[in-house]
Length: 322
Length: 267
Ligand SMILES: Nc1ncnc2c1ncn2[C@@H]1O[C@H](COP(=O)(O)OP(=O)(O)OP(=O)(O)O)[C@@H](O)[C@H]1O
Ligand SMILES: [Mg+2]
Image (cartoon, rainbow over all chains, first blue to last red):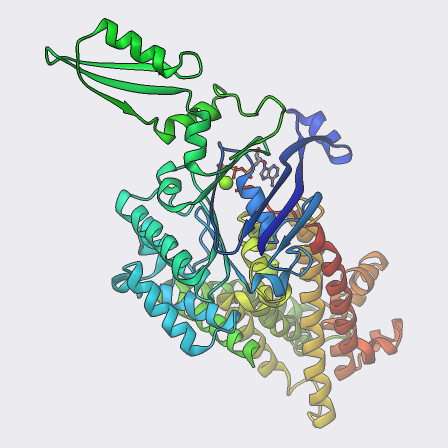
């Protein structure tokens, strides 16, 4: 069963163009020049129940805009959207009972009050039965290691602590689908790891369907089965992480240990030079004691893709699916 | 039932927040009280000289004022988020509400209460009422009390409805604060006096555009029956409590249509 079905959604923002000076601001009152920004430009994908999908792309690619459409905050200008049997922007109240949304950059917690107060409010807003509420709260606070700051006002919490609070607030009602928009932004390695483990745990034990955006490829490698890359509002990749490594890794690094103890590092492009040619070349040139071929780092591949050094589309113009 | 629990928890949170800054809250409340009371005292002193304005004596004037303050005390405890709505939109806090399985207006009304302003205006309203209510010749029998209560509710709904209308406008325009400044806050200043003292334009505005006249002038007229009521349709005194319901429902309808246009800010 497809949990999330997205079909050619588009979102264009109209941005008022504003020139400097008094005369133009007077003109501006009556007539505005709009510039159309194609934030999301024809994106389609479908996601099965229980999948974890990483959603990445450079700044301004349209990730948050997509998440907002998926969660019912924005109407798509065009295209179809069906999630868990609902059309998010049309059946908002029914639909949102089944989803949880975490915006890493924006807290939903009450700034001056302890976390527990915001959680209590969620209990009433989502009509969470008392036993489920207590069960979830206990489980989450343990998993995320929050016992010692749950009674502290949110304004006194560190970013990582606050983020954990936000995650709990969004998940107390046991949603079937969770959207995370940069849940690891600005966190240290330990906090990131905690959150990754938690997301994985939710997915494995509750079969929660998860989409999350991030700029940290470690998040993706450690948590996601599947990766969707978007750029300038368009989907440019949809598939596994290994798939992207195989498909877009145009360079491999070879480390060779020479007989005389010296080390050499070589990088080459497998599309230009086949492996056997490279090997022949190396063996004829050096006395090799040991050799190791390093897989390219996913970070490098992604950087190459963002910077346009890698062909994003196959020759027939279709998005690379693996 | 669930709604009441949300309301109770929200109120608890608003109070709890203020209690964390006890001294600060107290000073702020006092400041609101003193600021508003000063205006009243100035008027009071001026009236000592003139004795009457358009037939209204000092106590009647204070009674007129008390309605304005009492209704406003409820308005700021219920509609604080709508008063600060453009700020909410700008900061993206409105997005959050859309993610919750409850009505948007319902959440906005329950969410934050401006307790400081509420207590400040409320206390002043009660003071003015206590000072004047027994000296203006009103017999407080049951029908009168019922009229009075419905007039207060109507006054709250009129002002709440206006806040909703102004908030709905911010779905169309980026800047709505100045519109509200002109139409709400300025007109509210006029509402302290019997509208009969103003020129036709302002009277018309106060009755049909920004209907503050139905918040305090016409309800006070029902209770006081001053001569200047002869200038207006007598009906207005009787329908004053209903005007609030009509305005509120109109505002609600406009809100429902406008909220569809909402497009959230980046990030
Ligand atoms: N409310 C808005 N009005 C106008 N333009 C907007 C608005 N929100 C976003 N945009 C534009 O739409 C594009 C996509 O923005 P979006 O926030 O979806 O990007 P993103 O992929 O989440 O980026 P980031 O990684 O920086 O969070 C950007 O060019 C942005 O400037
Ligand atoms: Mg974003």
